[in-house]
Image: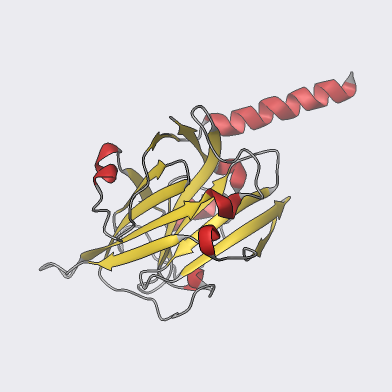
Amino acid sequence: MRLFILSAIAFFYNAAAFAQEKAITVQKTTDFAVTGDGSDNAWGTTAWHMITQRNSNELKNAGWYITENRLTIADIQYQTRFKILYSDKGIYCLYECQDSLITATIKEDFGDLFNEDVVEAFFWPDTAQVVYFEYELSPRNYELPLIIFNKNGNANGWLPFYYRGGRRTVHAVKLNTAGADKRFTWTAEFFIPYALLSSLNNMPPAKGSTWRANFYRIDYDREPVYSSWQLTRGSYHDPEKFGLLQFE
């Protein structure tokens, strides 16, 4: 009986933790070419979702370690937004990032892209597992795909095995011309095949499936500025604070 009560408490605690999460209805599409600028008509069928720039106080209150010289939201205020679709073969994502300076010197895949300008997507298909997928793409079109094992906040990443053929992502980036205010946008578009995610449960998604997920950006004009769809505690690796994807 005591075990049942503790299990019930844990269940309702987790349900309450997830109750405040944002949700996205993910529409289905036929497969299309990834061009980097989101020009395919399929993107016109789904809405943009905002990624919010986080200020220092907000991050501190959420348990992040933020030094005094970190930027605040008033210093930059870049807009970031994203779209997501799914097909019978994989997941499509499109990011649009406002910027005035590209900080991206890494010129190789699988590098530490998170130390420079980058967009990121985390997918957690099965909350019973401590495993989820992380994908990073730089404005120079270099990528970092990782399988993450996160046990009690101890997150470790592994590069995908046999990463070729139908298991590889498809990705492209476009830098747009700056306006009179010296601001411009860069767009990042990528396709993640289910074949790459085959080690995860609840795969592939079907109508009615639900995943946990989060979407991020880091900008390094001077000091790192962190943006997220869902605010997390302490770092981006906080799956209990991910939002909800509901597949249509």
